[in-house]
Structures are given as structure tokens and as C-alpha cells.
Image (cartoon, rainbow, N blue to C red):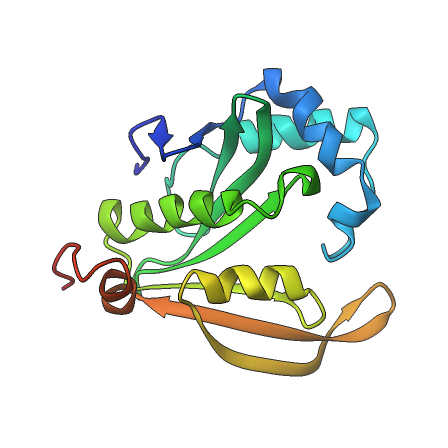
Length: 193
């Protein structure tokens, strides 16, 4: 089993496992149409739906097997402002997929970039990943900008590749290799095998 040493702290944030006590904060953004707009199959959630979501995320505190999702609450003094996740996609290829959801009221200050950076750092150091990638809807400009700010390159633009809200949608794929990540993060970091 692989898990970060909790909590992960950054200059302004604390990343930790989700707990049932996070329900009010999580529901505050999960109920918003602007938050779920680009999420496949998601609609604004009722409080009970958010309770189920929080319960599921609370069990995602470590990687036990390929396919597992590590989901961490992103907390400030104001409470939980979002979640970041890293899905273990391939043990053999040492690959994971990054994801994130944030309350829009906390946007524009670099908090999402700070949180995702901390989690990807753990993936490259704690698990010695080779590659991290992320995907987003072709029109989700905020998500695409975040991945570009992280130093991820746009690897693909899949045209009309999946069904989204009853229509064909484009998907963007961004990725970064460990050596690229460490070169961008001041040329340091562990030696990658």
C-alpha cells in the first residue's frame, strides 16, 4: 500500500484525506452547476448525493492496487476548497492520471496550481512515476490552462471522441514525464529509473 505522509503541506494549503466532516464544504461546490459543467455524467448534487460522494472519497486515501484513486481534500483556513486526485493507471508503465475539482470562489489565486503541484510531486517522488497525464473537455479552458501552467504538454486533441451530455465532444490530453517535471521544478528532484 502506498500513501503520502499526511498531511501534505504547501505554503498556503493542507492536503489530507477526505473525512465525513467535510460534507458541508464539499456540498458547497458540488451543488453548483458551474462546477459540474464539464464533468461527465455529473449534475448538481443534493446534500445526500454529496454525503455519498464524501463517503466514497474518504476511502480513497492510498494506492492499494492498479486502478485505485488517491483523493485528497484541499484545505485552507476557510475550510475545504476542493479535491485533487491521482489515479494509478499502470503499474508496469508507472503512469497516473491527475484530476481536480475546486470551488470557484477560491479561483484566480493559484491555489489549484499549488495543490495539484504538491500531489504530482508526491507521485513522482513517493511512487517514482514515469508519467502523469490529465484529460479535459475540449472547451474546458480553465482546466487546460491549469495543466499548461503545471508544465504539462498538450499531447492530443481527440475530435468528437466521446459522448458528453448527448453530443459528441472533443477531449484534450496533457502529460508530463518525470524528467520534464523536475527540470521545470528548478532542475532538482530524484533520479528517475
